[in-house]
Image 1 (cartoon, rainbow, N blue to C red):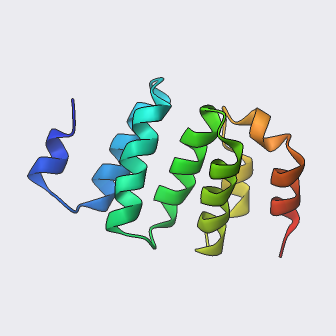
Image 2: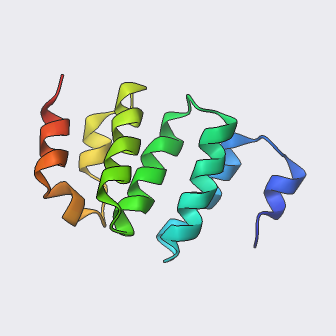
Image 3: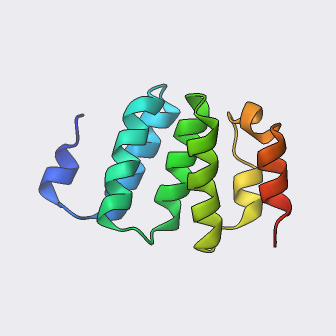
Length: 105
């Protein structure tokens, strides 16, 4: 599967975001980050794309970029508890910058 669904429904942001989540959960966070970046470009206000790109970047060890994505998701109204419950990003969650961001109002 290389994005056939996206060619059938170009611009369907939820499909793109779910495809990225699929790649992330199946061990290809680099591909996931690319797909989520495309989702963000297509719909900059879609908070889940920012959250999911941040998760993919965190799994790749790109701390600053991951924090920027997650911060944007929070600014768009994404719930903090959802970010805090995200598995597989423990290294990011232990960082002082992440903890400070999660305590912001």
